[in-house]
Image 1 (cartoon, rainbow, N blue to C red):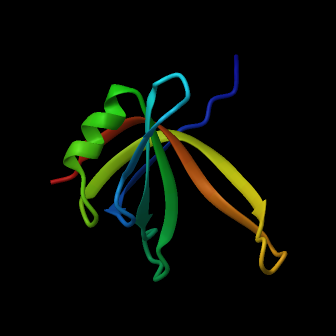
Image 2: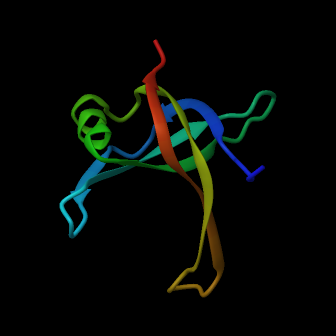
Length: 102
């Protein structure tokens, strides 16, 4: 059996969605989603990426502050800050499902 990893997060949109296209013309959209784990005071921020026609639909209907349920494959984006030289990391989700939490 192959490994499989998927997480579900319910949280609020932080950064407004940004829509762009790949060189091949495929729509892709990014936004941030903030969620506070139960019993914790600190909000965790996730970068969410949506592909294809779903990206266009979400872009047209989602605004900063909206509450969403997002399911996707977690990925870790690691880079070095160009100013400080410090290592940085961010949890990213390649989504499969985005639902409005009403």
